[in-house]
Amino acid sequence: MSFSEEQQALTDRLLRLLDSGVSVPTAAASLGIGRGRAYALRRRAGVSGARSAAAIGPERRHAVLVAFEAHGSVRAAARAVGLSHGAARRILVEAGCVPAEPVAAVGRTGKPEARARFLELLEAGHSSAAAAREVGVHPRTARDWRRGVKRSGDTRTYPDGTVVDSRKRTRYLQTMTRQAPADPKCGGRHLTLDQRIDIADGLVNRHSYRRIATTIGRPASTVSREVAAHSVAGLYLPHRAHEQARAARARPKTCKLAVNTELRERVEDGLRQEHSPEQISRRLRLDFPHDESMRVSHETIYQALYFQARGGLKRELVVALRTGRTRRKSQRRADERRPRFVEDMVMISDRPAEVEDRAVPGHWEGDLIMGANNQSAIGTLVERATRYTMLVHLPNGHNAEHVRDQLLATIVTLPQHLRGSLTWDQGCEMAQHHAFTMASDMQVYFCDPASPWQRGTNENTNGLLRQYFPKGSDLSIHGPEDLEHVAQKLNGRPRKTLDWETPAERLRDLLTTT
Image (cartoon, rainbow, N blue to C red; front, side, top):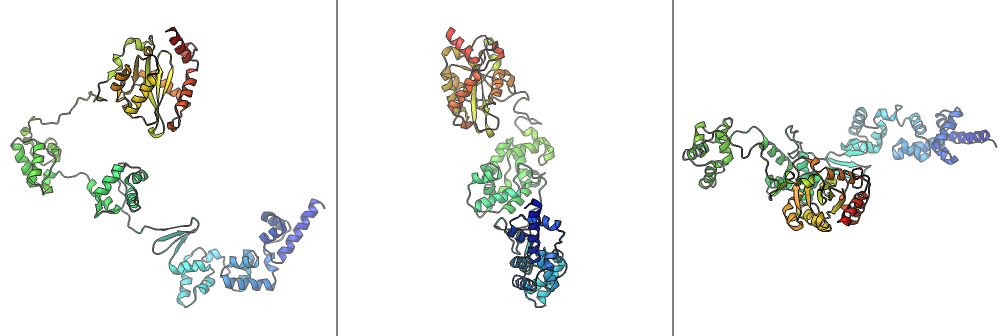
């Protein structure tokens, strides 16, 4: 049998099944072909979709009516009898069981006119099932209308606020609390209402402050202060806390000395007696131990004296201050930089000239390369003359004490004549530089602020190391063996600045000649 003859035989069998009232999907499954191919064969045969309904016998028509009476759904009746939805609907329309209009137009998805008609039938004494059949909706939809349930896709919202998602199989209670209006002044440093609600939820579930802080992206101390400041009888109320915080944050505020007459007079009396603002503030605490309104900080007094816009105190009282200044004096010069560490730093300007011209080997540059979120680090040491690289393993973080100890463990592996000096930036990891110098006999020199070019050799080496330790990766996964392997690779590379010799060869020659 040729292909065309086989296709014609298949089409004839399909049409016989359709003439008996079988739906196209059912016929396709019976013949072992796909649904799309069955529809294509029907179209090529010039048969419309109405033929399957027209040729249905009286027995199957009666079966459709019985199934619809039992289930109240056109789809369920069609599925029970094995017909298509369209064929079963046409039978029910001819029998007067459902209206002639399409189901979607009548209100299957909740049209207002269909729902109004349904409620009218209920008031007239019809049952819910009968009223559903009258308007042509599923009994489940009719029950939702009767109970006041709102449906949106697979989600149903009940009058008490309960939300049920049948697809995700979730059930939760929708908040019915009035939301506070958005605060336009609430910036990134202030807690939002959503974050305060997350804090309340965490407290209800007995989460720790640190776990709650991680959830909202804040420090644990922020959560602790928030709960302590806005708890009522041991209960944290997020909406009330948000309103209180907004009210306390309102600016500008009136100076306390401008509105409290008694407090202002006591402060003025103290100034006339040549008491300092701090003495006045502390004395008020002793004189009025139970009166919070008679408290004022010394900074408020200074501002009321020096900034007349703050109001409150007379200008002539400034002369009562010990210094007699009419303006505040800065505590340091504009060009003065506070010391970085407790121990005095030796700056790079004091480094010997032999280090600068790389004439004498044994002078090193160091730094840290940081991992993801600055949680891990690797120390790098580069010898200025030979470009020889050593990597320092930091398994326990990069605090000053750990960096000091690991640097010492690495430096002591070098001969004494290669321990000349170490140049570093002003990172906090070198806070123990004095202890490192005492233990290793290597002077540490510090670069100027924001001057990475003063450690150019080390900066270039760090860039080469990023081939093996990419930015944003976790560096704690690399052990001492991994660091040694990478260092050997780097020291085995020919360098243009070394006339295409390798750092390992230069160091070898240096050790053998010495």
